[in-house]
Length: 271
Length: 257
Image 1 (cartoon, rainbow over the protein chains, first blue to last red):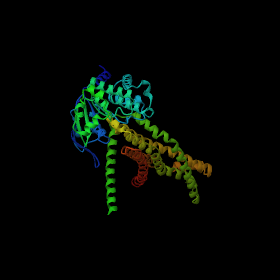
Image 2: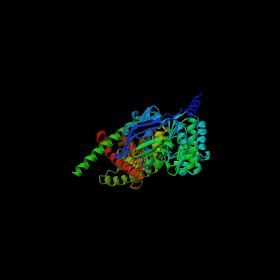
Image 3: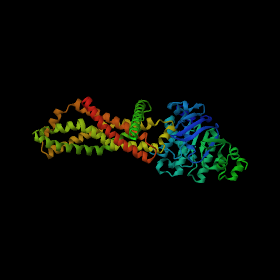
Image 4: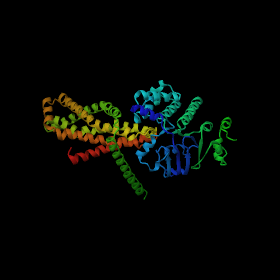
């Protein structure tokens, strides 16, 4: 098999993601404490959704998993790698297995949509330009964008398109771990449902460990295998039905807010 | 008591910033020696920092040379030494005005643009996006801009000096009536290639390193909001300009360039 063929196969057949774990993590910005003693698990190969109020530390949690922030104390583990003991070079090795969709996109603004998606492939694989083009257009189609839109610059995209391009870039290398910061906000219902189905398909077909921040409780209950609720600088976690039965009124209210009863019935959540 | 506290805090902050800047500079220099060498980004930056600065450098160089010739002629006339005008204009431009004014102009045009661009990338999480794609922003963003600034500075300085000499010749010979042959022969006779020309280029390279490091560092460490980017850009212009002027004195005093 050619080098290019090997790279292609490697990208297409990357293994199932492992567990992500936080142990007694303390995180603060100056004197503002975000997590006091956070211990939680994101199960391997499952879709975990993080819920919580504004400023509860949802995005901080994703940044800790990506090694973009370092905790004051405690341990963060991605698969078998303990991030708090890794040097910068080790962190880059872990990040090669992670795809991250930022809340505001974080697309390179001087690159076209095509170049933004092709960039990780050009950096980390030896795929030919034809193979890169094929993969870029496949991912654009998967998120509901047409190949004609690949010449646009990020500044020419609407908010919803920007989100979808950011997601397409995050999944371009079929990562083992996918971190999504509010993938549904700013999307119309059809686009949101398309993204939801895409995430579910990715999870089922590739076993990607997926961690999604969402404010949308119905979609959370539709897609989540595991839910983490950030309250009082710590976390409460479980399946959607376990959390809805929680005796903590804050958790129960958060998970029940605006819930579509039909969805709960479909998921077998007891009222 | 409060004033002493503030002074101590400022001193500590300065030392901390200096330490961080040194670490950043070391990291950038090390990264410049490691692959991947991003030639595409480097040539893009050469274009942005160099080609787009050509007009301001040429116009400023010609204007400075013209003023220098005008002032020089009036002064030299008192001593009956107007034939030396070529040497006065040439040596002044080569040894001091060329590299220093080019560095100041490059700071205002290219350095501030570099800081603003990197600062905007910080504010819009593009640098974090690169890190999450396992691409080191030091390699992709900082090193090409730093190297481009180092390469471009002596070239712009040489252009500034050439235009300055042109402006000086025009005013001295065409306007003030100095003999063209004597103007040029005096210039050739008094300019030493190693001491003046090479020294001038070395000075420009040193200023390129300083402006490149300060502008990328300020952008890299700017606060992630519009006020932060604005403050970082202003800080680049102030810090780099003052550093260039101080360094000019030090380089001249130590090495006689």
